Image 1 (cartoon, protein in one colour):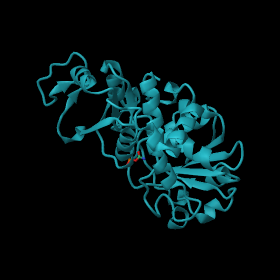
Image 2: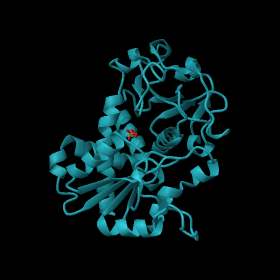
Image 3: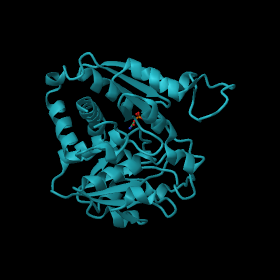
Length: 313
Ligand code: CP
């Protein structure tokens, strides 16, 4: 694997899942994989899980890990051909080249602005690092995708499925803030590419994800119908793709125990952070059907499998 920006970079999802589970089963045995190698993590946006799990994955494999917060004032220019006489100190061409001198793998987190759909869906920041870095680049969540989260979600489903081909429902849920589409885009893309689950996406009218991410899934605007006989229910809010960045108040889409009564005793999933009793009720989150901490745990092993595959080339 040369880079890890989307599911399209993964030669085999099953192999990544197998490698993640093998490292998870015996982390100490993999401590020499990244010896004398350096991983640099660049964060243009804040993180709890992605930052700590990727650092833990790197150190578990023996990497030296350096994390830099880019939101703190070091401003990069991403436009080509501009006169750089304002506040951006350095062009990504030099920055990516310089960082490539200091590391063997470069990982980047950058969120969308949610103002201009075309600009966000160019995924300019992560693609600029891919273009100008001379080392493999990993997405720690970009404007359009969150592949390390999606791989962790695949691992979690593989560990908990009770039938060969479970029904997985990705349901939109309410949230007080405007959120990106990266997690649901990526989850839908990985589930359909994996091909081992039946994916149903449920969201209010006007909140369909971009069709290229949900191709192969059933898209419904009736949450109760979608949840029927589900084996896994993955809740997530996202802002609109069509009326780009628009939000809506729909408290009736909150996931609670009554909603889950029509499922096949489904497991509940969420990437976290989650707003309790806005997105999902305490009753669901605190129940033995909740896999949210398993998902967070699997972020480490997902990142470890990806770092290992990138070193292998
Ligand atoms: N799920 C996830 O990416 O969490 P963070 O934003 O804390 O990294």
